Image 1 (cartoon, protein in one colour):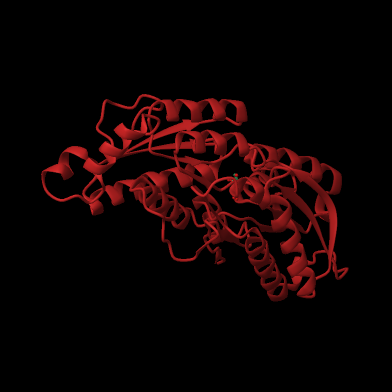
Image 2 (tube, rainbow, N blue to C red):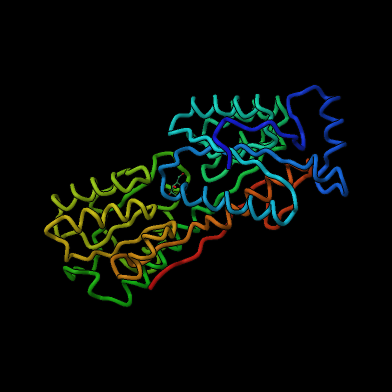
Length: 345
Ligand code: GAL
């Protein structure tokens, strides 16, 4: 991988932003998959990847998978792919400037994990002007922005499915263990940790999780809800406050992701209610959460398939880099939604 923003002097597949004639000549000389001498000297694809915040545990895992998939593609296709990353550190203005930098430096394709998912329009317009295709991922642009140009794609998941699978784990767990209803009142009292407000994976996961539990016949009572912005530290802080407020009245913790669920477990471990063992459900399937499922501190998690999403992102970027119209199984309206999987003991 290259240092961010410092691409080497390379021969590229395409040099976007140069005059049309130059661009057309380079394309003709360097089309992906050319045989013979041309292959070694000209085949290079340059991909810029922008992450909303690399400190996010799931995004960190996704970045690793993206890296791995590009390396595998390089070997498989016998080509050279330069991948450079920018961390936008939670600032959309910074990300827009980073997009300008990649475009000025002649990158062929940009993969964008938006900071503010409703703010894609300016980025789309930049890509369109320079004819640099965009693969958005994880933070879904609104459909009006996805329709602004035909060289825009999105890779993510179905948030409704993720929440529903959480609900199924919760139901199975409570049905198998009557003791989950600790006070025996026939209702599970729960606290809810939500991701960022406005993120498609927050409200939708919550709604479908709660709906599937209630439809499955387990009655719920919400004690409290708070946004912990996907963060372990914030999940811990919220849970510590709720333990002070509700004590052993908390029978379950439903979390929109694993990091916040792990934060709730941290707070529990540091409290004098460490033995409480509420039903804790997360989502992402990150390694530490899987370990917590194995040792019984979490009832389960749902895998937000980082590998599957990385494969889709890399396949799209590679085909767009060849100036081909991507033909990827299960893609609909330029959107790929990678299915979730369930992890329980
Ligand atoms: C979600 C994921 C969260 C967080 C968020 C960032 O899909 O479950 O853990 O990474 O994306 O946008």
